[in-house]
Picture 1 (tube, helix red, strand yellow):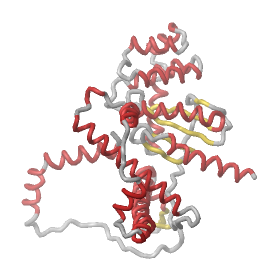
Picture 2 (spheres, rainbow, N blue to C red):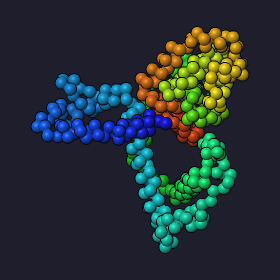
Picture 3 (cartoon, rainbow, N blue to C red):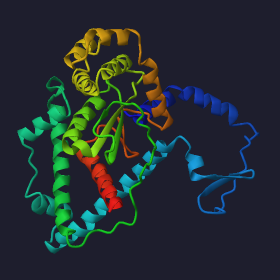
Length: 364
């Protein structure tokens, strides 16, 4: 669950449970004649570019205003951009496919189903099973209603893919011009002495803040493995710890992983994979077992864990994440650009490829 989902859920719950108290408060205060005083604020044109406010004689920039809430502001801008792109996609369907539909004397929906989708959208049993496996949905939890929802979702996604393919053909010779850009977050993230995969001088640095007990992080770990294979020496992957309070085994696992890392970074990544594959077994005995399987010396590992050697190290990772606005796991930074959540490799590749191309252009 992301930070925003968590906040929405529990704040809403709080509003419901405290409704009687709030109602009583308004009954008491509604009849008073004394309005609460507010700061005097005047909206004006900025005296010069980059200035957003002036308090007393001091001027403040956009950066001053945002402060340490960069990621919150970025997510708002990203949400606005995504809404704009959704609307643009609908306009493309109405304008481009709608024109084709009129020529054929059909409604847009009928045209899509008959001409674009070839008369219907079928989901094979293989597609269904792949989705269930990819999303780690236990078969025991799937009843007929849930299966129906999954099939409906897959049909919707397949329909969208077919529409996008058709739009790609229609816009091949005449691309759609868009006059607004995707927002970019340029957060400075210090790698420090975090466990690293790849070359130190790689053109793209991917920093992940993660939690060994987080199910979404487990899915992201699979994507990380794919990124290693796809980009190899072109990227540098750094792992930062951000164990969440609701996951009691996450912090001990994080400390244990650094005890393994002390014996070799290659061992850390093996340990990393073992823990994400066995999230339901992160007790002390299991952590020791995985360390041995990763190739760590059992005695040195046990002594390191018992001494809580990396407790302060993990705390520093948490604090560094909080400082740059990390609120949920997994959170990735690709050359300072944020990607939040267990995104598919295609989403990562879009950002990484752009960064690699930008670096290549800069070196010409």
